[in-house]
Amino acid sequence: MTSVTVVLLDDDALLLKALQRTIIRTFPNTIVLVANELDEFWQLLQDNPDVDLVISDYLMPHMNGLDVLELCVARYPYPVRALLTGDMTNTTIMRQPNLVHAYLSKPFSGADITNLLNNVAELKSLPFEKHVRRQLGAMMSFPVCPIFLQKLQIVLSSDDYNLHQITTIVSQEPVITAKLLQIANSAYLGFQRQTSSIDEAVSRIGSTMLLAIVTSLAMSQAVGNVLPTRVHERQLEIASNYAGCVKTFAEHAGFNRKNQELLFSVAILSFVGKVILLCGDQSLAQSYDEGINTDDLAHYQSVSAYVMKLWGYDSRICTLLMSCNDLNGIKEAKLNEINQLLYIVRKILFSACSVDKLQVLLTDKNVDINLTQALASFDWKTYLISY
Image (cartoon, rainbow, N blue to C red; front, side):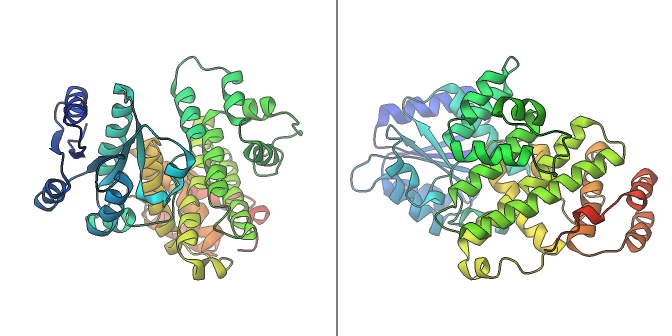
């Protein structure tokens, strides 16, 4: 694991030591700096500009943890921000959502620490420039990963989950359940017959695509009070069309089902970043239906990769999200081929690039001949909706 530097703030010396021991025991190569007073905390951040993670207790004298993290956004936006709290009420969680990237509930467990440190280390290993990480850390418009989605991730990451466990979690969110059924019955997934039950929808969609769809829907639900309904509905429509096109083209090009599902997931999650940016810029939201090009998408996908890694997503997905405009930007050959397919679909859908022109480009870049041939024989008209 990539080594990380952590700063802990807590006025309770015993709890501070316990958290420090847990982190070091779990990740021995982690540098853990501790402070039980605010002045000491700020001095540590000033003296250590490469801190990767800040963990602050919530209940402290003179200033609570949310106030501390709010100042961190302005002064030191680079580190991931986590809040240690025994109060997981909506009042605490919903205040200025991007003050907190992750919550550690009291009593914390080794698994909680492991998940958080893994995400921070993998985020550090992604190819973000430092100034970009600071910009992303200062954003004030994306929410913490919803608890129900965290539960779904845990279940799907186990080796022995069953359909009932998944449907029980998803069904707790009626709006998301209804939207999931709508997508399952849409042309985007290409199923031959309609489905009327959430159990059947979950079974047919598969775990990889299910998690991506539910994540996209959860983000739309989270911003429901910020963006006009027509705006995030439109973004979901565009994302679903893009993902459906990617999956169908992947099948046409001979990709196996596992990679088709991975491609679909990357495509639909790429618009998470756009929704976040629309939330943070209301003037942009007002002109949301203006044309999209691949340069715009590269920026959206960078934001998506940052948030998805904080939400515990597979680093392969985050890597693919970040390689938007580079045909040969991934060293791993199999993953680079997946990226090349995404590049092709983006050029056709979002840049109005002609098939002939794109074929010439792919040939010049030594892209696999199978992809070039598939490009020419695919029916793109179905997916060329108005953007």
